[in-house]
Amino acid sequence: MKQPSPTPSPSPADQQRLALLIEAESLQLGEFLALLDREESLLIKGETDALVAVANQKNERYRELQRLHDERSRLLGRLGYSVSDASIRSLCAGLPRVLARWDEVVSRARQARDRNALNGQLILERMAGNQAALTVLLSAANHPQLYDADGLAKPTGGGRILGSA
Image (cartoon, rainbow, N blue to C red; front, side):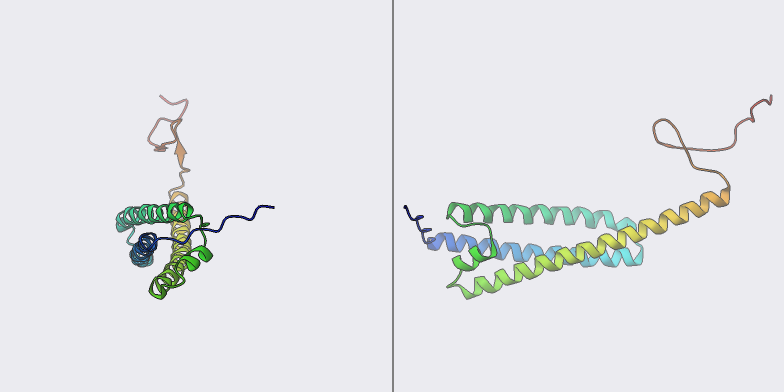
């Protein structure tokens, strides 16, 4: 029975490339967390107009994080490793500073996931409050909201009553 061939040792250049990717990912995650903090602050203050800019910045950071992850995955694959925490730890076993930075990436990624979920909940609560306020306003006006065939809001009242001239 044939034994699986051992995974070749990564070259110093490959290890350096991995270290640079991990460093870049940690920095991007730090910036992403700062944006999540800003988003939370805006949501709590009700400054919804500023949220669009923050959302655009979050999307840019996310795309960059995805690019770094994809590049790291390709490097691991080329070296014959799976995309996993264990693979990173194996490849960086003799590089304590890189391992410390990797631990930071893992921790920041968890924080980002949790903060993003919290901000999503704040958005849902804000939307529910807006919907409740809209319902109250429509009820107070005693006019149901009507929509035309295109789904656009249609003003009510102001027309003639059927059967009148």
